[in-house]
Image 1: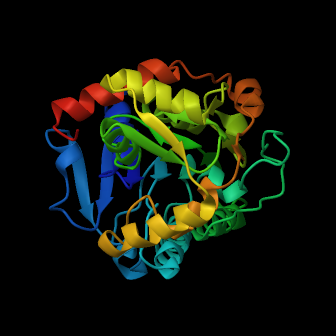
Image 2: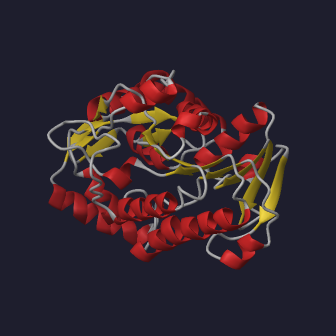
Length: 320
């Protein structure tokens, strides 16, 4: 089987590439910058130099893949337009070319985000049927990406995956919180509740959905069925790195001030004004019932062990 992966050089994408290789797929990766292959080194992957923002470069590809896994996109940006260009336009270009030149494809799997659906209301987990209500520019751009993929569902078989917060080796987003906790202090805005998933579980869920006929045309939340609150997440990271921090809850106004200062030094940090719109929401929990019933999928990794494995990788690679 031939599989094409976009975003294969990134955190989740590189784990997916490894998993596909273990299952004996012939794996191709669309890469804009061939010099950024650190997570793919030593892997039997065929690199295709192209840019999802450049539709003409995509048309030059020999389109005869059995599966296309679209994980391309950005979670951080210095300007909202960057989200739109990467998460919507890039997806639009890709799915249009696939529909035109690779219509015999077995499945087009688009990896979106819980942010596209938005936070839950009154503590009720968001389901795949909940009307989307994203609160950030990132979430809105991911929703647009979903919508353009769904537009082609009568031309090619599609499946949309919505992960919640993803953590694990190679992740640079949760790394920020590991580093913060390592200093001995942790700042938080709300005592929220969150769906989470360890990267290996997510990748297994993506591949499971790609193989199942009943997943065609469907959207799934792939997540740990157990949500976690702020204190449980901090505790898991604290134990993983052997540091018990002082927890400081700060008002939103002060949080916004610190974020604006922080952005002056790092415009593409995970700690930014757009993410603040998500951070202040008290509930980011999604239902896993559809994935459990239709796909028979359940996660294997609990937060404690997942954070321990993540911390071990960070240490081995001198990230913390």
